[in-house]
Amino acid sequence: MSVHLGSTLKKTAQTVQKQKLNGEKITMLTSYDFTLAHLVDAAGVDMILVGDSAANVMLGHDYTLPITVNEMIVYARGVVRAAKQAMVVVDMPFGSYQISEEDALRNAVKVMKETGCDALKLEGGEDIVHIIKHMTSAGIPIMGHLGLTPQSVHKFGGYSLRAKQEAEAEKLMHDALLLQEAGCFSLVLEKIPAALAKEVTEKLTIPVIGIGAGNSTDGQVLVLQDMLGMNDGFKPKFLRHFAQLGDAVKQAAGDYINAVRSGDFPNESESY
Ligand code: KIV
Image (cartoon, rainbow, N blue to C red):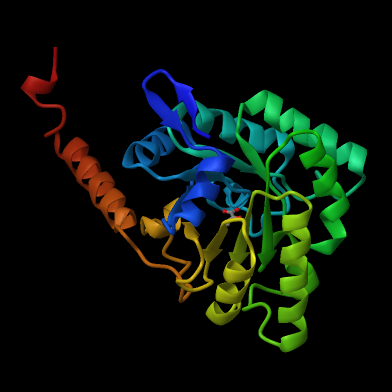
């Protein structure tokens, strides 16, 4: 079902599920602010993720762990105002859903109420299934996230490829099925072998969105600033630069500095 908003149709958990059924690839990009979310939405992306990668991209932290519920809410509000057709999914940050079912639901309700987003995303498998059931029972659409789960970076000691070994791959498949059974409407698989992602995608009836998980998933997600080429320091194998905005911004800022210093800007036509 799409929700009618004036003349536009807004994507929902049901429309992305229908895309899987119809074999139509699902597109998702992150955004953390009104301006970029407006452009991404106008381009026609299916889902916008207000990822807790905002901790890195917007706040300059080394990890995603420090970002708070209130910080996520500020970013998500701008994105929700911009998204006219895309479904907006917001990451529940580290610590906001691990303490107890009651605390998790309180935080989830707060994010839904204060942002107006369409769904939430949580990292983890079997350990958090009871939390996810609590949220889906309350009517909140949940996207799962398995494979590389950045909130657990200290447990794994880095961001290496996950589920390479058979035991870990079996556990991931088991977790994926549990998340589907718990009511997740969709699942992100991050940085796992393409063959395993294909198997999970074929086994699950809910849409599987990959990042660093090969080309057989039902859809793809990338961090916007990474795919726009704004982050020199991050170039994993799975990332493609669809633009070189980092260079363009540096060039424009340099041209502006030169124009101001030389007295060329503003000129007469740019003055009142
Ligand atoms: O926080 C994020 O941006 C994410 C994506 C990488 C899937 O979780």
